[in-house]
Length: 332
Image (cartoon, rainbow, N blue to C red; front, top):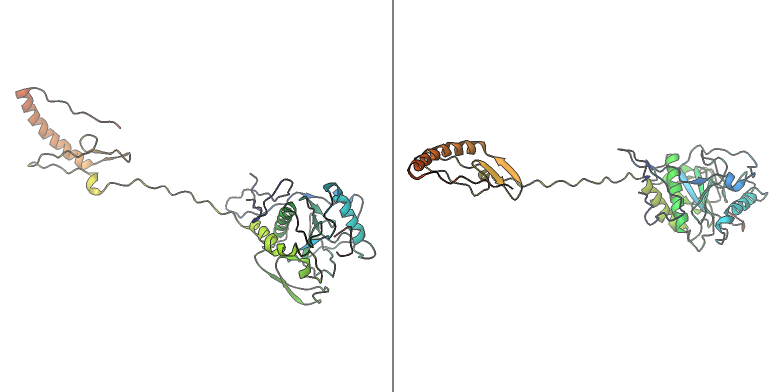
């Protein structure tokens, strides 16, 4: 099992299915589990020679993760995904958008494959772009497809959950509650405004847009955030069962009384000989030292009497022992 620093849980109802890229885990005694990088195909696998058309800056202060959708048809086959990403690149770097590269740091396709988007995002927090203006302080994670009326596939949801959990660890986000930052300006929040958001949010929380779609937006807070948060939680230790001790005999039953000179010894109703008491049912063997000594003393007295009997009647019977974003429709 590859459970590490980050059960699988596939979160809540987001259990990985065949073909889903899932976060792996490593055993670290005494440490919380933390997601490691899930399988991600590098930018070169879809972009080939399509290089950024301008410089890309790093995001110096990542506070949250922003979920998008490309709003492209949901009819793409798995083989067509690289071509779809190239189409999005061409749109984003066109005169209409004017961005240096695809806007998003990562894509997740309907088949559960995670792709590096903006160049360099696999190794560092590269600043992204967004329709309506970017608030900054975020990394952008985008579903490939149109989720206006149709939610992402289970494979895509599981992979996005793993991706968000890994990025949270990489960027030092705990996902425990909302964060507040100063907006860099968008068509929803003016520059300098104080904005409070969950650490996993939808594009429409930051800009005046319908992205990531009516079918997906409720799932951001309802499944993706709790799912990623669950992957960050330390595993629940399994308590070892407490052994039930064998019942101890009462003090009166532990030792046989020492016979007196005026009273013949009384035989205890237990298996064994002399002062050895065998609790047959519990398998517990106790030796009463004082009782044994007393029994030996009594036995000596009885032996003297027995010798007298033997002289008169012959030997007695011996004692017996018991053993137990898109071929764009311009709505990115």
